[in-house]
Image 1: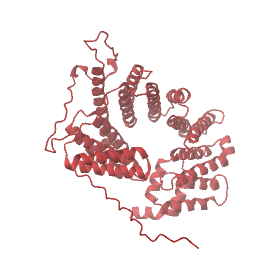
Image 2 (image 1 turned 45 degrees about the vertical axis):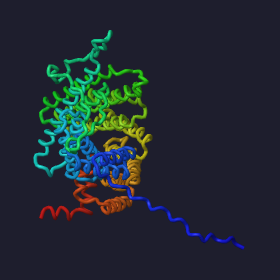
Image 3 (image 1 turned 120 degrees about the vertical axis):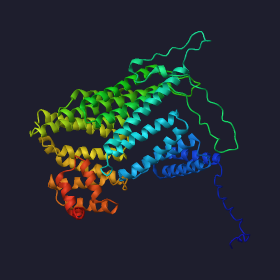
Image 4 (image 1 turned 180 degrees about the vertical axis):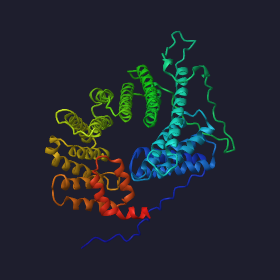
Length: 528
C-alpha cells in the first residue's frame, strides 16, 4: 500500500523582484561599468556584445543626467568603439564607418571638456586610424583617399600629443628630489624627439571634486594610472604603426620612405625606453616586471617586422624590384620572438607566414611581368621554399589555435597558390595541395557558418580546381552546391565580386564560372 501523499499546498515560489532601473547619474555609471566589465570577461561572442551594448545604453543614460562628465563620455565612446569589432564580417565599409564615427564623436566631446585627457586622445587616434583603413575599402564615398589621409595625420598628431604629455609626467615623476641625497637620473635622447621641450610646464595637481546640487557641476574622477616606460612604449608603437600605414599609401616614393624613417625613429625611442624598464619586480607595485619587459620586447619586434615588410612592399610597387634585405630583416625580428621570447606566439607565427608569402609572391610577380616562367632550379625553387616555410609557420600557429578561422583561410589560400604554380614540384603535389585547401576552407566554415567573407568561396574554389586542375570528376557540381548554401546564408553578387577583387588566389576562370551560374542577371541590371 502506497504512502499517503502530502496534500498541503506547496509554498509558492517568490516572484523575483524586477530590478530597479537606475535613476541617477551615479547609478547609471555603476550599471554601465558593471556591464562593461562583464563584456571584458566574455571578450567575444554574443554575451560580450550584449553586455557592451547594455553598457553603451547605460553610459548614454548617465549622459542624460550629466552631459559635462568627461569620463562618462569617454567610456561611452570606448564601448562604442569596441562594438565595431562585433559587426558581421560581411558588413559594408559604410556600416563600419557609422559605428566608428559614433565613437569618434564621443571622444571629441570628452576632449572638449578635458583637452589633455590622454586616454581619450589615445583612443580617438586609434579610432581615426581604423576610420582611415575602412575608407580605403570603399568606393562609395567621395574623396575617400583624401579623407583617409586626413584621419591618419590627425591620429599621428594625437599620438604625438599623448606621448608629449606622458613623457612630461614621467620625467616629473622621477625628477630629482632636492630634499633627497641621491636623485634618480633618467636619461633621454632628445635628438629623436619631434617636440619642443621648451614648452613643458609644471603639471598642476588635480583638485578634489566638490559636491554640488547641480548635476552640471558634478563630475566623477576616474583613477588614472601613472605613466610608465611601458605606457610610453605603447604610445610610440601606435604612432609608428600609424605612420607606416600612411607611408604605404603615399603616392610619392621619397615622401613614403621619409615617413617610414620617422616611424623607425619612433621604434628607436621605444628601444630606449625598453632599456629603462626594470628587470626585477617591486613587491609593492603588484607588477611582474620581467613579464612586462618581455611583452614590450615582443611588441617592439612585431612592429619592427611589420614596418620592414611594409617598406619592402612599397619599394616593390615603386621599382618593381624585390628588396630581399628588408624582407629578411622582418623575418629575423619575428624569428627572435619565437626562438627567444615566446615559442607559442601565434601573432608572430602568422605575421611570419604573411611576410614569407608576400616575399614569394613578389619574386613570382617579377618573372610574370617579364613574361618569363619560373626557373625550377633558381627563382622557382626560391618561391617554392618561401611558400613551404610560410605553410609551416601557419601550421605551427594552427596547432595552438585549431579553430582560428583566419589561420584556416590563410592555409587554404596558400595551398591554392602553391597548387597553381607552374613548377614540376607543384604539379607532383597538386592533388594533395588542393585536398589540403578543401580541408582548411571546409573546416573554417564548420567553425563558424555565419562568416560569409572567406571559407565558403575558398571551399568552392578548391572543389572547382579539383576537377579543373586535377581531373577529379563531379567536383564542379559540389562547388555549385557550396555557393548555393552561401547565397542562402546571405551571400550575393556584389559581395562575391568585392571578395574576388581582393583575393589573388582565386582563378579568373573560377570567378567567371560562379558569375555565369549565379550572378549574370546582376550585371544585366547594373547595365540597365
